[in-house]
Amino acid sequence: MTQIPDALGIYEDEDGDLWIRFEDGHDKWLHLAKWHPTPIDRSWMSEFVTDEDVAEHLPLECISNGKKEEER
Image 1 (cartoon, one colour):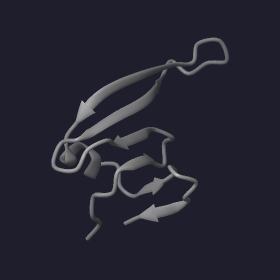
Image 2 (image 1 turned 45 degrees about the vertical axis):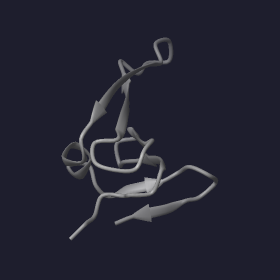
Image 3 (image 1 turned 90 degrees about the vertical axis):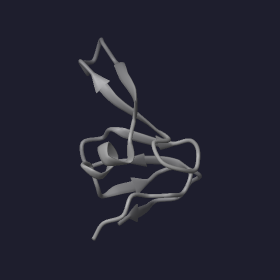
Image 4 (image 1 turned 180 degrees about the vertical axis):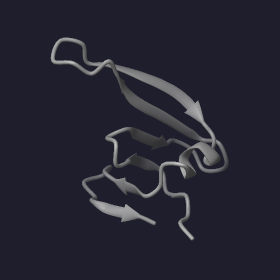
């Protein structure tokens, strides 16, 4: 069974979305996704999400602090 990462940091899913765990505990995630990604418009959409939302996008790869490791 795949587990949701519990370490603080920045994670990336297979679609290139960013998932930022900024506090310990349940529901402490910020989701960043490209919004209309074109060469001209490089906007991002952001939303606070729950652990259940994150679980739908596993596995995540930790990309913060110079680390490159997959969270499973």
